[in-house]
Image (cartoon, rainbow, N blue to C red; front, side):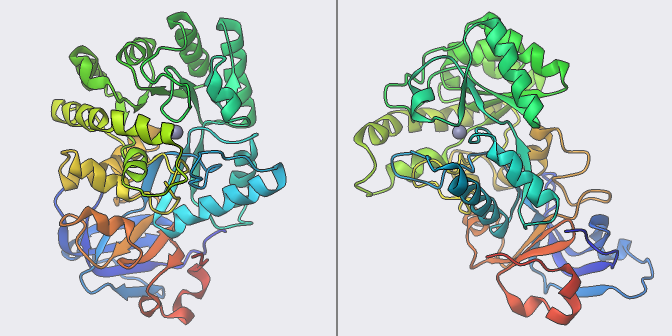
Length: 424
Ligand SMILES: [Zn+2]
């Protein structure tokens, strides 16, 4: 919904700007037309304003809206990871999942495997103002070789065997409006007979896919668990390695990622949600496969992070018991795996925006960036779980508009009437 030009001044806040800098107390943020005019110490803000709204946040913490670089809007956390729904209900399911993200402070999602192209419809309606929802960076279908997963996730996969088919599959995603291309370089954990360590595409197919994506200015996200597949994806020129479970086995690949600024998206939450659950409906094969790989995934993140590889937050929300709106827990799990709190937050804000290539206008609280932000009443640097708990989340702003509010006393309704589009 288009925002009016009224100014908003947020004052008396603690600023965590998403760049990895230390928090600033007594900061202010000035917003006009959905963008940030100024963010920083109150001493640096002196511009006279006529009209507009001033909100005293009483020292609470303000962060950029969170960016989840790996979700599946088609999934709602079904125990058996079966996302199927007929087309009519699937589009509503995706819209609802998108809204759950926004309500929880995830103002941007990157979907890495949609369903029958319905995610493009959802994005169009959100962009047009018909519904509230997060910003959406879309890959369209997951491009895969012929394998069991393509049967299991009908609607999400686009099977392509051989260089010509791979090129055609990329062109189809671009035609539908994809911002990037997703390739399944290796097998998957969440496919019953899938071998996560096995390399699926041949190197010439991966190269052809990346080359075709580049022709259209698209980057490539590579689903890759095994070290051989990771190496081939890196050599071909992908932008992000999704999961990277066995990355620890190849120090040279880690070094290549650091040198070339290739992002790791570790997706730890998906495994923890399954392992820590006592839900008897989780199929045994899903439980066992996650138990056997979780330590390796955490180890790979730790090694990559310590080596200086850029990391972006991706929860894989939509997978079993991995519910949309709880994505912020991924930041906590990244901290548990060894990232410093400030770096884990940067991975879900400024770093994530870089992984998307959207850092010029999104991801940090700096002048000129979009006014996407969240306000929390506790210090997330002391406990990252604050970022996944609506009891701490006061309100969520997207493009200067309050999109969700969990603490009504902060928002005098008459003053904010033109800025509020509430969802829960
Ligand atoms: Zn995924």
